[in-house]
Length: 375
Image 1 (cartoon, rainbow, N blue to C red):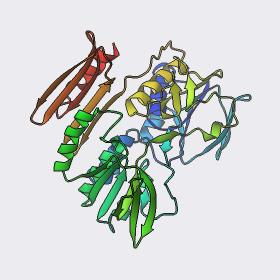
Image 2 (spheres, rainbow, N blue to C red; image 1 turned 90 degrees about the horizontal axis):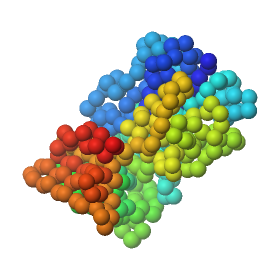
Image 3 (cartoon, rainbow, N blue to C red; image 1 turned 180 degrees about the vertical axis):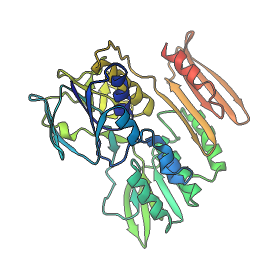
């Protein structure tokens, strides 16, 4: 049997590993638009900060693909899929498949104010982009990171480690609006301020321009900020443009069922390009889980994906932060808060059922809480 996997990220590699658990003879080809082997994308900021050589964040080197008898096409692009004739078309020509997994991931979103002609305005998703930022830091003393999410905070700290004055610009009034509530975000903000990171919160960027060698960030309230370089960290969009002429069902992402199947036979999807039950997760743990499920399904195993628990765990500026599950407050929600020096914990319950938790300073219970919430 011939299986083609479009992608070489965590969903794609998790799927390939899962297939190999059951099918040693399955002919697997993976197609990657990068020229590199599989690396830990969430750790790119460590490389950006100069704390880890790139080799340290590679997860699967060439030996792994050879050992698992996987043909990896690197630096290859997919242009279309002919599902009627079961063909994947691209820079490599045409490849026939029996089963197809689309794990093409996502790319940075570009907000309306983005101008690709501006110098020293960057995004961070790949090693190549990280290398461009590193090169630019040698001529810069200040940076603004537009977006106060996970990547934005870690990027700000990475640049501060390279000696730049880093400022996070965030539309919402608090950091990590998808992962933290306002109270816990304020605590994190204080800790990050102590590390030298600055903040402009509740600021909507309306335009970027070059003025006298600086980037002028104009805000909708009439204010502005001038910095030497800017990194836009405004979320991601799924890599699915090559599917525009296919019959694969697409909502915001590729729609999948509880067995990771699309609407077409023997075509599966997983990771940042997929949409399950109206949700797109955009986080590493969910992509890994979906990839494993897809691999098992392709290998003929019974799976029942019920969605992933929204969970995030990071360490930035030496501060451990984690959030798990749902921390929205309904009339029936009870909240428990524990706060002592350097440690903040907040638990959200519906009756006796734990539905969410936020941890700052001490995240040792993260995996236990993740399991409890998932049950």
